[in-house]
Length: 171
Image 1 (cartoon, rainbow, N blue to C red):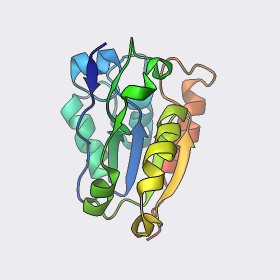
Image 2 (image 1 turned 60 degrees about the vertical axis):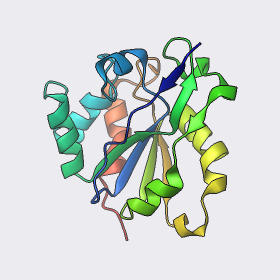
Image 3 (image 1 turned 180 degrees about the vertical axis):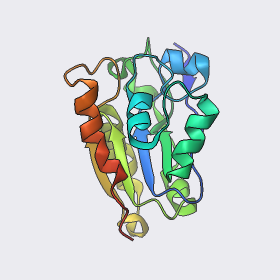
């Protein structure tokens, strides 16, 4: 099993909200795009909330997120995994991204949203204990996964749950 490397973040110095996934799927890795699987609800949700519709070019979708002060990244920098399911990640292989440096650089980020349970679980276990008091202002919330594997909610229900990311950031 070879190491899978994630992507650099979609982020600007104006970002106020960070959406964290776990690791890109095989399809996303092939396309070199966050949430590249056509069955993933991420871009339809971002379309409904911000106008970053799936039919736009990837570069335009990224730009719309940045215009709306939304950043996207993954908790994992690399891991070993068969297929695309988070449940297939080899725990002993995970390497997390450097969030101390990230939050120090992107000082306007106040709210962190987890795209599903695995991102939250890994973050709380491997990242949160290493964040010092400088980052105590961060607020966290898990949202329903946009993955096609998470089918307990339909698209309208996911959009409704994700609307919280549009709430103004209190400084």
